[in-house]
Image (cartoon, rainbow, N blue to C red; front, side, top):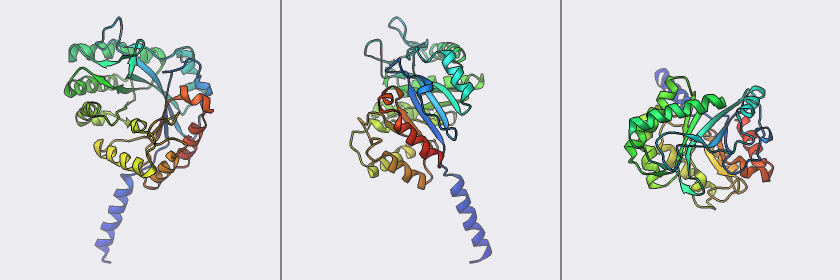
Length: 294
């Protein structure tokens, strides 16, 4: 082979390798379903970056919504002192808060329903800054699942919120948590199109697919969402109970091993610690061991 062609091939391989990389990031939602789980209960591999995501802060008070967020996660063991303690003792741990979620106040849907873009953003920045600073948090996660606003309004509100909190130094990372539903995807893809560079991780809810999918189907879905959120760090995910998608006892780790071989394993996240406690957090340990060896 001519020297010039050989150099071109080497450069191509090098660039391809640089654009694909595994990660040692483990993320887990906590506090949505139980007040008995402690951060100190959780397995934490020192060779993995661990994010605990408090679920949820919701802009809901007295039946109204407009960006005025309040704490709705179970605070019995997730108080500011608990978060400060785990972060002081485990330097590889960060803590975020997830916004929105599925339901609020006894099962009512948690709608994204701003009265105006400017008022929602102003209220959200103010109320979330107070919560983030009070609880010593590092980032936010966007998990709205129900909408009474068009995709463009959602994109502008959430995009401006993330960029403002970043510019003020209130947060150091942001993530989104979409799933394969047409209204949901239309809102998150609008946000991604305009503000994708502000979003560090895509916590795609692969467990929202029907229960019993196989490894090959999971990998197909993974590639499809990586294409939708092009350039994003797409995390593989499972639900602790195994009630949806590819369960942790039914091939999830086989799929992650294949993603790792393809240099696509950007991390793993789990819904949720509250459910995992009854399983002794064994799948969290397996996840972190797999990531640590990446």
